[in-house]
Image (cartoon, rainbow, N blue to C red; front, top):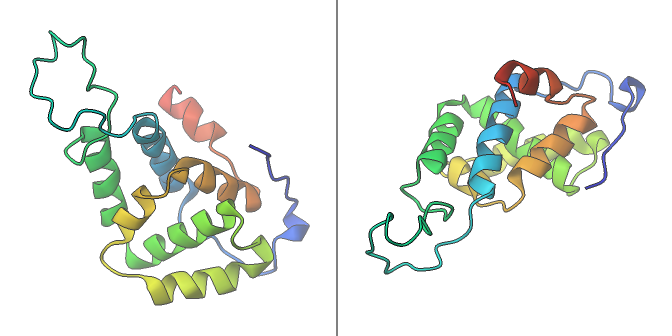
Length: 150
């Protein structure tokens, strides 16, 4: 994925991300774990994990711990942080440019509902979008990754 290189002069004056970058980095880390999994290839599987070579371990399921942790963390964010997170994903996806942050943020606020966590976890490249969104603000997760031993 192409990295966005942004200088402080390209970020419109007075534009704040609205969410702590460490929280975004935590979500990126959780989303990467969840994104690494694949869809349920055998929904009727009732076999013993030891017998089937742990085939279901890397399949994402609604009861998956990494999914539940990601959903819970997003749900604990304030409404303002959730709105900023959605807008950040849209900037990272390329739907909006950093210069259009206000527009993206306003639409995210207008569209906000109780299903924000479901919406975000439904984005197939959520971690990449958020990473690119951070880059648009001239930020990254290097310090967070170092702290977490990633």
